[in-house]
Length: 212
Image (tube, rainbow, N blue to C red):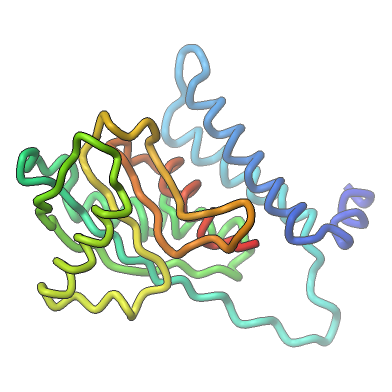
């Protein structure tokens, strides 16, 4: 343990990000394990692993002031389409998933960062889009959603990140996508296609939060 602590003092942001991604990979592997795992036991595993990552984060120097937590304000926009007006999730359920006290995106990142990353926000919608869904034009859907939000008086400028959540679209092969690029900065936006789970929500916002 002492060796891990000593090595952790020299771990850079990229190393910590790789560890965080491994935690999420382990979570997915547990979720797919034969026989399944209960939500409670999976959550306890994630919290335990989040505490393990703390070994790789150097504690503040003695006598130094603790840095103020990084504040992330997330707007979750619930979308549907004129040709598919279903509302698979309630606003309250989505609010609890992202911002609840336990088993949420907010509690996950609070534990992972030892309280140094605060995630708050609001859930809006449903916003009905008149858009072509025969192609995976998710960026166009995002742009249309922002225009609808503006018309509805929603001030997205107050948020650091925007998540677009919509019913499953067969044209998109992924369950979650974040506006990242290997040669450029990570964007503020992410998209969830049909499968709204804690893993997907945490994973995609992770791309946005840890910009490289």
